[in-house]
Image (cartoon, rainbow, N blue to C red; front, side):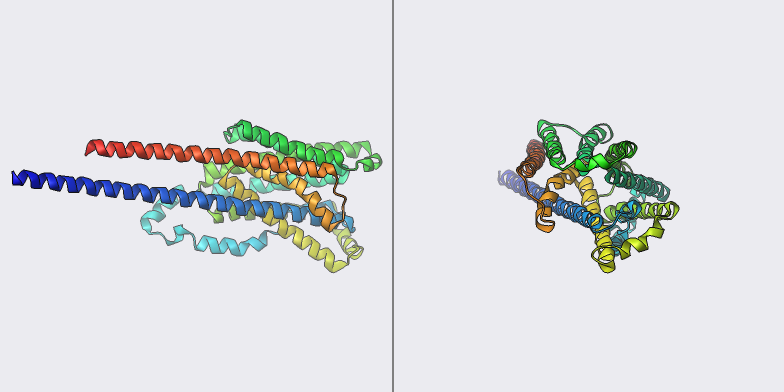
Length: 389
């Protein structure tokens, strides 16, 4: 009888020990899940700041360049990608300190199996670089031949193009909140365009106006395709969510795009006029050079934020944040260029914020659903363990 009681006591202790271990593991998994969620949203917040700050500063500096005497379309295309050398120290640092470089032989073998082929990456970077060159050049032609109002209105269509490409290439799911966000941000950008002064269009020849119109529409479509293809490349080819992969996706295509711009600058003969342009710049030669340098740097900051959001969320979300900056720029222009802040601009800003909150709320609902699904799976697993005991 005593032996039976001892056996029952041992069995009870073993079961209680298993229960404590199971509870501990569930607690650790829950803690790791929370840390991953907090890390993701922290990274998303940083990338949003990079995108908004970089794009807003680049647009304002670009306006300063044209207002004070700059008029080279190839130079304005060149500076959009020429700032990539400032990212090279970061690429070397994060590549050398990546977890893969410190892993053991087995992990290295598994990393080699998942690492994409060099030939695939080279073709990918060259393709993106050429796409970026053509896209930036078409935007420059559009800005040169169109009034600001028409140009801004056509640029706002990139959100619709991106929604279409994301649906077919990235299997983007559309909900009422996402659709509401797209509509609100598109209306916000369109309000700014309609409110702009378009009287300058009377002096533009019809042929150049048509060229500018077509170039801007094609540029919006190509940029949207560029974002969707980048997300597809991260999912199917690169298959890594690291900061070094973000830097690589920005640096190498930018090198190709910059090389294409240099060839275009010399082939078009615009390089001959750059010296006179610098000398006649209203704020002086030093200010001319510094303006171009900071335009290049801020576009790189924007690009890091854009690619980071594509990697962490989606290409559509990245484009939504980019569109959000359209009503922010006029607000900043009130302080830096003493522009008038009309009621239409205020309404556009409120609509943009509303659209942004709508999209963020959809992601909050998705996170809550994922959390509920994981908790249900954990409960079912614990029930299974009890039944086995």
